[in-house]
Length: 107
Length: 107
Length: 107
Length: 107
Image (tube, rainbow over all chains, first blue to last red; front, side):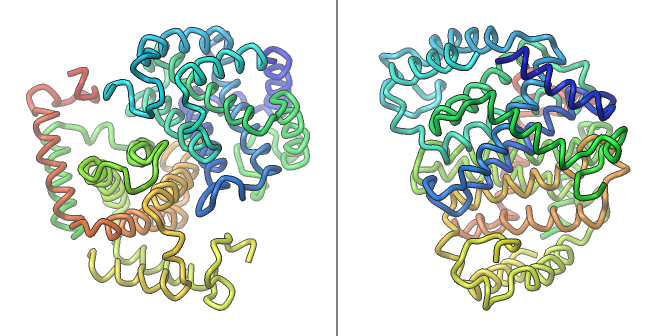
């Protein structure tokens, strides 16, 4: 997905001349704000009562800022995720992590 | 990217029998925590001093939980982002939004 | 609590010459990070299984950055909370808000 | 401040019959959301351009949920902060931490 979608996000940004605001620190702040807006859809309720239309919108915002941040550093999104899964395979070995939600430093 | 990477994330999850913990509310919580860990890399400093290797790891975690949440609802990630860009084109018309960082309700 | 505790926080800060880092934006970032660390104690679990000793520590961090931020603007913490309760009395009138977790704009 | 203000917060809550929603996990979620709304006031801008009236409101919300969470566990807010300062005195010894924003595990 990355190239096409990122191109659409950059087009939206540049039509508004917003690159001047998009330094990595503020993009990371924006990502946190969108993640919190997504989380708000689950506040005070069981997950099945969250509004799916709004989840789509807020999750899209999360992806958008994550992609813009990846673009700032010219990161290959697929690659960084695959690298992290490999790292997590070491942090969470199957025999120790299976069936438990403990953090790696408590396994 | 979505299918392949999501498949790798689900494989990692299922090998550890973690689906039982992955309800949408806790996935949204996990996404917030990872977004905050990413933001911490920029705390007390200018963006150019943030550690890029750690940014890759934390950004990968953000993408991972966002993809797992999208998977929970069988969402087409490309589609929800394109839909949101369309919506934002209305919320932020170019002639009003150009060159300003104001929120849509202040334009 | 405010004066004594704030004095202790400022002493800790000034002994380390950290005021140079404590601009309001970074204090707000730090507050978000601590709030997320507090939330992590509830991740993947029912609230009664969260670790109380760690809750105390992370909640203390949240209060500390909130107090440092209030101090930056010379705010009277008691007063801003009482003012907000008054405002919320209008946003959430008892007859409409009683027994429902809806947001004020959905009442 | 704690007793009086907490009493005002509990009165506001109980008049609306909201205790049923206020389990610690959702209170911690609410705290994160309010912290993010506070942070949003600093997004895309230098700290001196943030709106002080809104800062007061969002910071009040942060304090309110932090106090409600402390109340859930019958915590003495002053005490947990003083305990944490003592702990941080060990994590951040003055001679190592002075003038640097490094995290304790990097000192």
